[in-house]
Image (cartoon, rainbow, N blue to C red):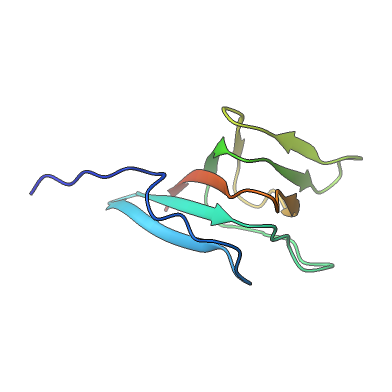
Length: 108
């Protein structure tokens, strides 16, 4: 079965939580569309994942802080980052005036 779609279709408006949509699941990898509308990681919370995550911002903007770094990395359309396993990180902010659309590839 052939699947297709558009990453910018049916973007949610402002909501309390990010929207996560799994686009593809294969042995060893998962691809997600993440739509943020002003969300950030809770105070004191750090992601600490057992797998590599590669993420690219397609629209909007966001700031990611890696543990041990002095300032967050600002990501704009086209910017990507590969986060190795157990590199603690957090989302400092996402753009609130327009959706931030991410494409995330998780090595699982």
